[in-house]
Image (cartoon, rainbow, N blue to C red; front, top):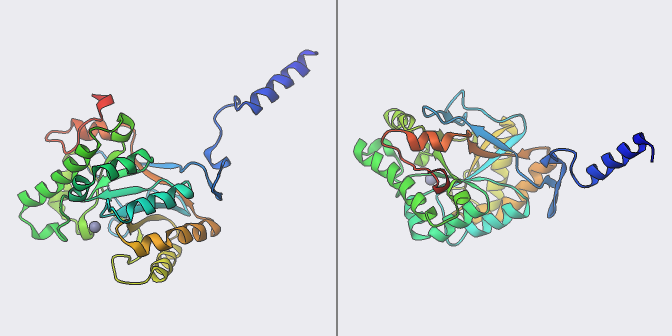
Length: 282
Ligand SMILES: [Zn+2]
């Protein structure tokens, strides 16, 4: 075989074996949702000093590109609905972020581990979900936040290191009721505050059709960002698959929020840290 032909044959063999370099995740279709890529691209959020994300509250909090959507789910894990939500996300090959309540994580550590094992990011949302941390004495509010992190971390303690690392230095204020001194307290521990760019009113007693309609209208108005939903709500699980399909049809793509590369280490090394190292990094 002539050298040129030989080289061509090698190149072709390399291509067919996938040896020609990294395959772009976007180029591989999700087996159960051909419109979606098989892998969710990640968006790394800097966490040093306690940055805040989500333009509903923080004007400079936009990290997503046009038509990029990050799905987030609050208030779980819920024994009735979280697994349904996980199955729907799996079916569409989407990774999301779950802001968990410590009390529920403590009650169902197996569900915390399930969320992590399926590759989602986990943030925290206090221990017992007081609706407004602004109304609590500061030591109590801080205890709410730190117990939330501790509960999720305890639930993941027996999980593989990769799952432990799914716990991100991300915090979401209940009711999005943030407070300046608590935000700087989080910032000193390199924990980012994650708000949202739009919601779907799914905490209200409305039908799943209404949740679907409001989510779409709010997303179309802003065009990119973090959507806040609740994995505790059956009406959210009921419309989730349809919402995903419609967003894909409209040209949106899903991204997963993750902390910047050394974000967990930064948070774990902070004085009076709220979160430790995953075992593999100790
Ligand atoms: Zn909440």
